[in-house]
Length: 153
Image 1 (cartoon, rainbow, N blue to C red):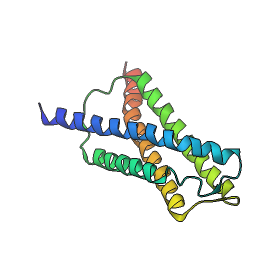
Image 2: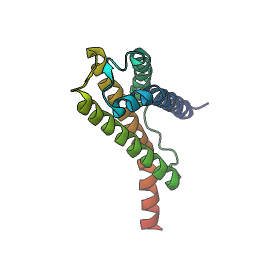
Image 3: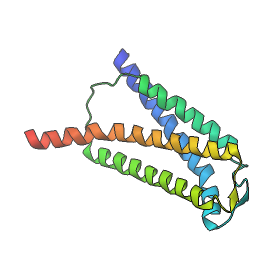
């Protein structure tokens, strides 16, 4: 197995773990999001999920920063449709981050989060933002390659 192939497998594996982490965070986060959206959520509404979500976010951060240390390969970047899907998913995730942050601000008056909950929420939102950057990094070469084929073809 070549070093280039090994790097590619490692990068793909780290991204897969990040993706599973995102699904886990959403699974934990969505019930809390619905509670906050429905009205005042009382005192420390996320106390039951904060440590689980922080652990998942920490693993996602390790994977994200680990992927950033792997040199980019110059392999084929085919798949303009895949590029569009990845970019769409990145935008969708970013909208979720924005709406979650807005919801926290709106509920600050009638819901009392712990300091750990507030810091943890910001860390989780930042982690999702990093995942969005990863999706965009995977999508852009596919879109650029497709547009350069059109220009030169």
